[in-house]
Structures are given as structure tokens and as C-alpha cells.
Length: 447
Ligand code: IFM
Image (cartoon, rainbow, N blue to C red; front, side):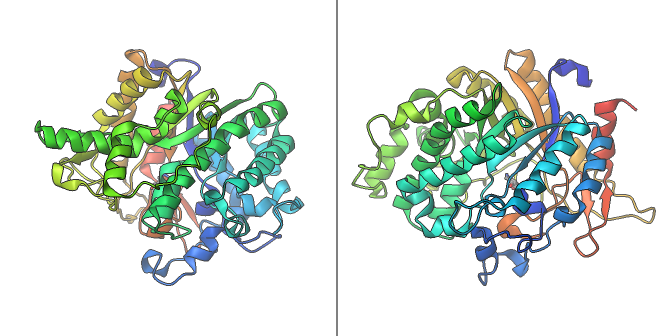
């Protein structure tokens, strides 16, 4: 497999997010995010890990960008920390935060690396949450003001915009299971959060396009294809419900102006779905389906479903059969190929990017100070091959961003999982590229 097999205009990249790497959570005027509050709540994060320092990227970003350049990527996907760029009233601007990202964007352009900017990778201001956040439809305006101000500020230098990262995780883990910030357990809030996230996405698109001429705007979904454990009608039915709950709940409104029926009936039957559906207004689906320039897909694994699984209250990547990553997620590259083909057929997006794909494994640093993370290399290579097969079958896949550029703070899992191509010593903040970094580099620049 050669880089050139993917076409000349293919975007090769890596991805990160603000809260997971930056640290310096209380300097230069940054206000609290919901994750600052959640991480301080006892029992929420594995081992009580904190993200006050994370990778100390806030101070070391120039050093990180040197490694990024050396890696040979075309593009870098990262997110803006909303609470770093506004004050408590969500209206005043924090110039130090704005400048922090402006310097980074300009440096990336200097290095000939294209920035892909995510507006919301989960670390929303606590002040926004306290005003009702995603549950409160009126709060959508705060997000639109944020999108307006950011695209005004950076519109000339950023041309690739992502509205939200993984709405399923925001709503399901944050508002239904409560295992992520803000830690709410309410099915009706969960449904509203989904809906309002999608509306805010749709409404922000024309704003961003107006401020950032000739830019491209999209959304990122974490899609996990479900497979039935057997060919029994019950397992197939279970799989259909899973796929609608996990994937089509987002794809359908975005591309077909509706929510999928069977899962909704299933929730209504269980008594979960809010009896009052007034929160869905008449032309909401027209707003949500505002045409995007690309669809970002984050793919990690698949789920295998059997009929007794009918329970949305568990994290459903389980019952797996093949080899697993440290997260217990099955390594299943064929699922990526099939997912790309299915999404292309059903939604026909103009362009697709794999905006995240990666794995966490344990490893050791050997006596030569090297990290031979062979399993990550195998994971990366096999998933790139899956991408190539999908492209050969006509999928308009135009980029691949590996998750992640560096080890980082893995949300409720703290520092337990390491997804990076670059190792981070979370005590000294020393950076050490792993063998997988060298592999990707060799692939990208043909040493
Ligand atoms: O670390 C996360 C990222 O923030 C969103 N997608 C999945 C990754 C691995 O769990």
C-alpha cells in the first residue's frame, strides 16, 4: 500500500482535542468547562486522574508542532476550548485565549499544515451548562454566537470547520448514562440534547460560511456498525434497533430529515421517549439537514448484538469476537470498509473524512528508549487498507486523521489509555515518538 493509492488530494492527518491535551485549565482567563467540574467530582474519573496539566500542550505546543511537521501530515484536526475564549457571561471575549489559537493556526499555516477546527469537542463552559446548556433550546443562541465570533476571528485563516464532535457521546454518555460530564441520567434530556445539538449544527453552517468564505463545514459522528450474533430474527431485530440508536439517530435527520422509526417505537413502548414532543418544531428537520461539505466519521470498532441485549443503558460495544484493544474494542477493519460503503449508499455525502481512528494498548519503553507499539502499527495499516478498499469501490473518502497525535487525557478513563503516536510522560511532559509514529511518517513521506 502506497500513500499515492489514495489519490493526490487525500488529506493525511492526526487529531487531538483541547481538554485532552492542553492543561493550564485555570490560566490566562480560562473559565471552567463542564469537564473541569466533572473531573473534580469524586468517583467520576478512573484513579481520580485530573486534567489540570494533561499534556501541557498549552506551553509546549511549538514543540508538538515540530513533531507534527516531522511526521509529514497535510492536516491537523484540533478543537477550540470554548471556555478559553469567552468570559463567564459567554459574551465577553478572552483575548489571551483567542490569541493562543491564532498563534497556533498561523504557525500551522507557516508549516504548510491545514487546520481542521472543531468548535465543540465536549468541553463546553460550565456557565453554558448552568443556563440550561444543550437541554435548553434557547441556549442554542449561545453556541451560534460562539460560532459567529470564532468564524469571524479565524475565518480568513481556517477553511475547514467541524461543528460538533460525536453528538452520541455528548448526549448518551453525558445525559443518559451520566458517565461523562455533566453526569446527568435522564432519557428525556438525552433526546433533547441530541435534537438541540443537531439544530445548533444546522443553524451554525450558514453563519460559518458567511464569515469564512470558501470554507467547508461538516459534523463528526462516531459510527459503530452493529452486526447480529446469529441469523435469528430476534438478533436481527436487536441489531436494527442498535444501528438506529447509535448511527441512524444522527444520519437520518442529517440526510433524510427524519428520526428512524423502529427505535423510536421501541423507546415509546418502553416508556422512555418523552410523551411531550413539543421540543421538535415544524421545520427543525430542514434546519438539521442543511447541506454540509463533508461528513466526518470516527470509527473504532463494531458491536455484535444478540436479542437479550435490549437495554440502551449500557455501553454497547461488547460481545466481540476478534482481537481486542485495551479498551476491549474488537479490532475489525472490515467494519470500516462496510460502514463507508453503507453510509455512502444511504446518505450520499459530498465527501467523507475519517476524522478519528485509533487504538489504545499497553507497552513498555525498552532499554534503548524505544516504544515498539507493533499492535498500533497493525491496527493503523489494516484500517488504511480498509479505507483503500472503500475508495476503490467508489466512496468519496478524502482524508484520514489518526487518533491520536499524542497520548492524552481519555475522559472518564483518565490516563489509563494511551492512543498516541507520540508517548507522553505525564510527570515530566517529555515527548517520545513511538514506532507507530515512525511507521506513519515513513508511509507519509517515504523515507
Ligand atoms: O479520546 C476520544 C475522543 O475524544 C473522541 N473519540 C474517541 C476517542 C477515544 O475514546
